[in-house]
Image (tube, one colour):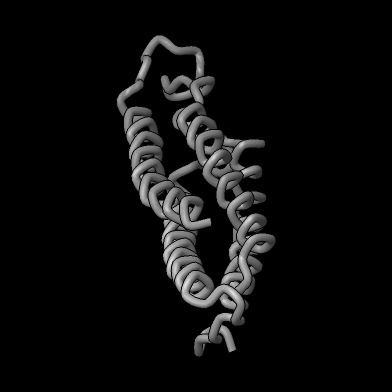
Length: 165
């Protein structure tokens, strides 16, 4: 479990940069739409109405985010099954609930990237990534503490922390 929590911390940190990259890409694509003026176009006012600015970047960002959400859901399930402390179980349940909500939100972005763009949901994804990083850090601390206590005296039940009362 320690390795899973360490990978989770690293992936949540990477996810922050991925979110920032795709937010910038979608905003850049929207900004470029102001410069795509075609006076010979048959659409109204000379703007090409068939070009969907930012939809491709939004869909790609949602697909990449899908894999991060899948990892955090898997980590929450494994944390719920493998850990022994109450703190880890509670954080796994909260993390799974939060992951489920954001996973559904990401699916909405994937279904219709023109209606919801990645730069609109990116702020929520940043919040999610920071929360998951905090949960992974606490899970790592709890896993290390539990391993130390059970290695010192394997026959005794580990002491309960204030968090695990």
